[in-house]
Image 1 (cartoon, one colour):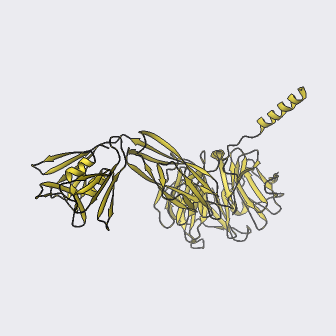
Image 2: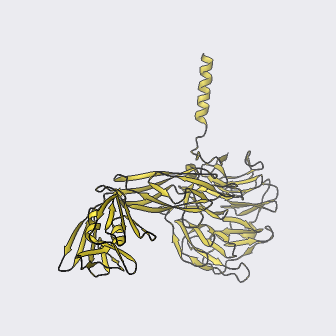
Length: 538
């Protein structure tokens, strides 16, 4: 018995020592592939090769991350700021010893200090076999011959403290600086002169979505059109968060925000959080065409498979407040940051109706909240999104308030009416039918002001008015026919003294007293000013 008890204790201790990760249970394509002893600052992958820079060493794996080997012998500094692999060479940037090149997978390193003459490399990237390097002391450099020679382009810059670079598909180049903002040039040739493009922030990273430039800074995310200099700070995270990295992934933008995690956008305006809460510790991200690699301050390296559809949706949609009995309309955007075609379904509570319950790829889903059956109070309702790109839960929050009275003011012969003090134009003003001595009013304007819906059947010349139940009134169904005094109110026959009539430009008019009483409202008449006041409490 003691033997089994000892085995049980050992098993329990082993389970307790296993790392506990709060990964999204619905996201089976997020995998922890490595744990390194230092904060991860940069990554690069190519086929089975995985390169990882940290704050205290460089690591390499040649088997998709199953095994890592430290390869920093010969480096003058172990704080790695950037890494790429091209032409069977590894290019490595460091914080205090400049740029290095290795031709043998990190077994030996050759310093490029004599060519770039700067110990602090802030970024290194490659596009179309051209290597781009930014530094904090000799500015911007690039090489078209795999590091044999380097070209310097600093014309027009007020500083040599450069931090980030990107070349857009249109050919426009953007260069970030430390404290002096963003600059652009449409050429990197001999005539290259950098022009000021964006405010004097410290630029940490640059990317784009279609024609929208996405700028990461030390004080948040800014976006604007690639061809102009009008930018707006996005507030999807309050305050001034530090942006670690911005990447274009499958045509979308992915942002790594220090202390908050990963966010994605397919339009450069709406950013939604995705992935694990563990990613709030994110330090760097990279993309190899199929997989997104996420490195954290704790030295953990994750891989997110984006070779298949991957659903991104808002975690919460805040709708504000609405009076009981009225409806709220909103939208929920969903999109795919993976490859292939995303398809899925939406499931919601009965009082939240989506215009469509199925979505494909990138869609804006319209929805309406019907509060007629809800009590007053705060609501946070779960929406279930199921798809071939993962399942997500989103939440719609709103507040149902006590309804207030609707006060309508009209005047005989006047085209101006008021609802709770706001003016509206009437193309058919109220008037008095002299033969009956009755005031008639436009039925659609009155009914819709009270929250009812009006339908017109041209074939039978029939008007139908429907109103959902409220706190003080039962549901209302009014049926009437043009030219006939017989009407139906909640399926009961009634007779009115003036038949409904149509006046130019095609407006149906009804006796004021009838329509007001049908809704349970009160009417006041001022014979001196010939003004009508209708008060309706839902």
